[in-house]
Length: 172
Image 1: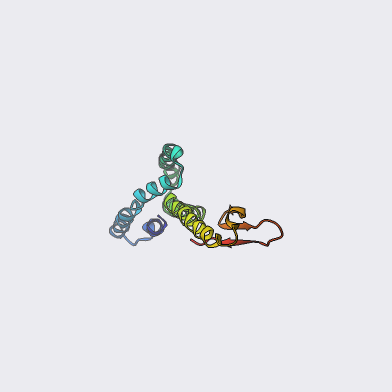
Image 2: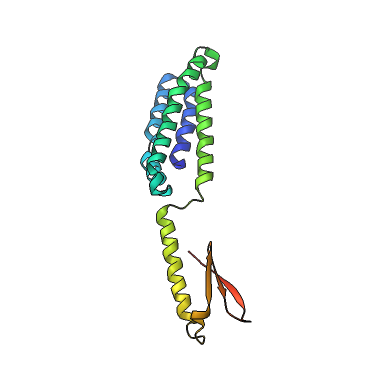
């Protein structure tokens, strides 16, 4: 999403800086050609990150947020277009706000893996746990006496009695 939005928003900022109408139209058309490229990806990612029971609400919320902004902006832009000295401001303001929005959205969601990646992580952890249990099964019945706790991405191993405890890092 950020990959297509950032160039699109830079093109939006460049529209009023073009030397004539023909170049402004070309830049604006170029912006239009890449500005909505991310919509299917964004919708798919939103549905993948949001739990199944909240997906329709998330889709509705993002749709309402986008249309509300589009509905309210002409009110403010009309006042800016009424003054010839402010006619460039809406382009700079819209492009700058959209760039800020994209960077904040990227920062917020870069650390949240999609559901498919979370499932792969859980499967990988289960395979490593099974391998670990097989490897300790020869320790005088220690498999039944070993307590395993999984916290985040670390597997904690506690042996009974005076035996040592330790932990094993689970790799992706």
